[in-house]
Image 1 (cartoon, rainbow, N blue to C red):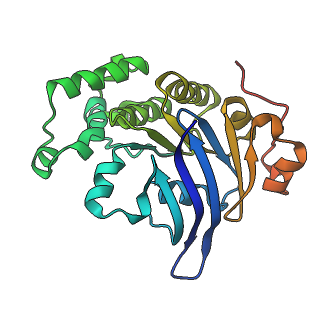
Image 2 (image 1 turned 180 degrees about the horizontal axis):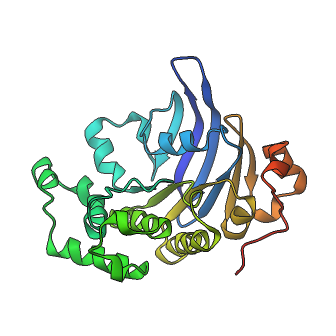
Length: 262
């Protein structure tokens, strides 16, 4: 299978001298579900932001469908970025706007400045937004303001906004960190369905090792800005987890025998 995303020796050093990423290399196939785990400060969020160039890596290569994102000018990057959906821990919604308005913001990458600033969307785009919201169980919330929603509902709106971009790759930065276990399971089930049914590649940053082991085709373990593990859930051993988390493993209550209720 051909890799849709390839990272080679990606590094990130800030002007202060702080090194956030060191020689990150891995590849991801189309439709794979990949979890990135590691303690706070391991570089997980920095890595996702380098992949979609919310921040620029200091070195290496990041290729999406063979094209090096790090060499793209602003115009080419804007055109390519519609292929990369992003889901945030704190949703990044405009709370005063309705659910459907927030979802339609996912189409802005396809608009010229005039249409985008005026919020001009086609009937087809609006119909697609409603279809996606219905598929995520939000048909009764379409016209509600986002500040009226629960955390789990807000995260599903974030997923819908990403899906209306028609992305090839979905980057999820701690998407369940602010949610209770029931809402977390709904979100993870939907992300896995997006991967398996729609064939969209999904990269998820997680703290929860048991969740990563249940849902992932591949797990990447990060520590101090580097990759210390790449493999399947079956290859994750106790010593691997403690190598990634150290003393934080017991503080987080990590138990690899525990899994989400199916």
